[in-house]
Length: 213
Image (tube, rainbow, N blue to C red; front, side, top):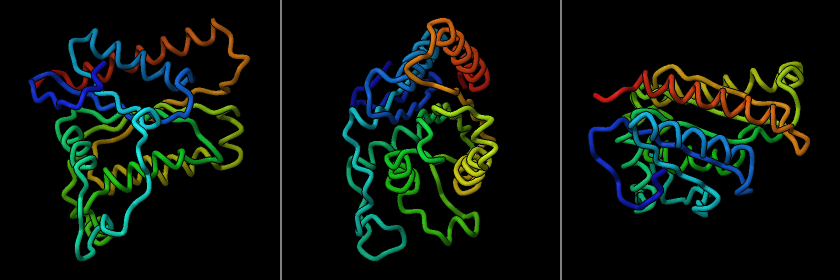
């Protein structure tokens, strides 16, 4: 997988894979590794953005607030956006904590994906976003079962407030969300391998969808 600071502008379909988990040996990390490996086996390119290992700062600074005088876009944010612009698909991989994505993912949305896009542009569907037309694929995990999340209303809220909102706000293609649960220390090897097979199947399907244009 590619994590270098050089943006590849070749003809291969590119997958920007945004991973958010504090542990390097997490289940989410295994999902990201598997996804990236399958993408490259398919002859495409995976750019992994491991937010914790990158020490990504999720805090939006006053000068980065869209629509304000003196707007400034840091070189780091500009680099992330350059990769997004070249991407064929955006992949988010994160655990569900307290019914929502981790703060670092939300910070990536605010500082990078939403850079210089005002609420008025979102309201008027006039956002000039590098995400326009790109599909979004999310892989999430949780310690509680998906049935429990649905009973609490958390699952439906997450999909509507996060996935569907990103689609509309940034004029993205329809999204897909793959959830794994319950994920904990007692996860058997057999169950783990079954879930990695699911990741492989989804990665291959996306590779077929985006192709090389």
